[in-house]
Length: 177
Length: 157
View 1 (cartoon, rainbow over the protein chains, first blue to last red):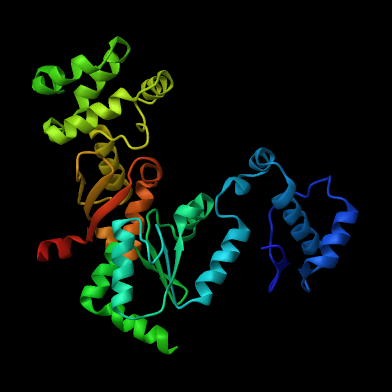
View 2: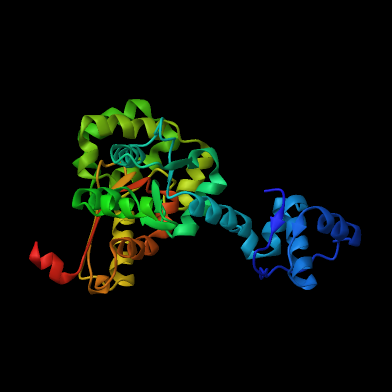
């Protein structure tokens, strides 16, 4: 995303970069940031944004361990939003119309057969997304199924729940909420 | 340790294809080949992968002999290592890691551990995944099947 909105104070544990200039602060502050956080935190946010967009990758990697993680705060925020915005989300290999992996296909067929609307996101298109999701869910494989904002499981757990009728029950509840 | 003579047909097929620089790899690979690799289809697959080795991957292979093999490559010590990690980290009663197709890309895992009591299916699998996270990032393509049981559940089967 090109702008940053803090619904609540963010604690960023990044060292302030000396090279950040005051003109940069005013520019970004005036254009992209809308929040009521304290100025100190605002500065931290700005510096982070600066790092994210302009620092060479090598320098980021050497600056802090956090930056070498695939799950950046920005990616985590984006994932939180995607998962919260849809009742059912499947991060998979391929798309719901063109699954590119047997396990992803199995999950898609189950959800289609239950006639529930669901979003699919193709992790093969973005390796950073793929690596970040593994950390996000502490789950190393795909597909990953999220229902009502919560990680539900991979292929075998989804199949198992479907066979027991638990999946149908959960989805019905989700659609009504 | 398996001897070369245990795989005479594999050896016969390999010799005309390989050239001298790869003999050391060949010897090492033979020592770790599983019974499944004696079948025709696996022989073919095995030979294909060997012929694509470059001097660089030759060095990588040798230097990593005691650690993880290259991505996409798996052998018995790795299976054993995964089993040991799971057994130790979960203090498991029993652990089984099977290489489903002999190519190491798909594994089946069965674990019986008291530590699973009170845990959901998702969290039980997470506990296992955590123990072998490194292997899952590099070598293993998919966990085809995983069962996680407490001793009581296992006894009830």
